[in-house]
Length: 67
Image 1 (cartoon, rainbow, N blue to C red):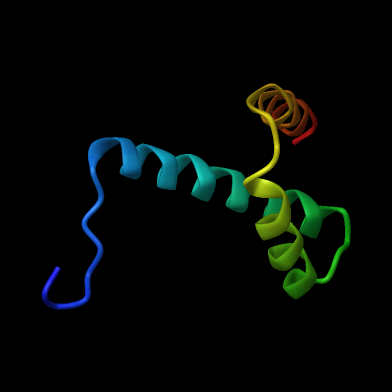
Image 2 (image 1 turned 90 degrees about the vertical axis):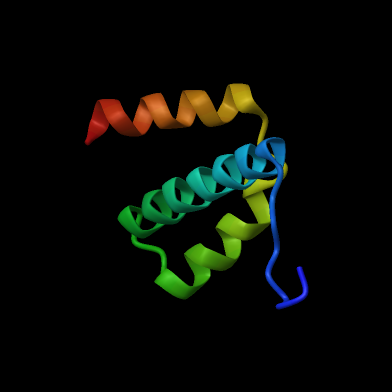
């Protein structure tokens, strides 16, 4: 908008929320593995956009089952 803010459509917001969920879950997972927090955030950014829905769902289930 005129103030420099982004306005997302419903579908844009859905995509943003999906990516944010992936980022936070992957970051937490890597930290729990003992990876440096700064590295985990960088790695999560690289992975979150390319991970299939199937793999992410399986990873979430795996993490839920072990935590």
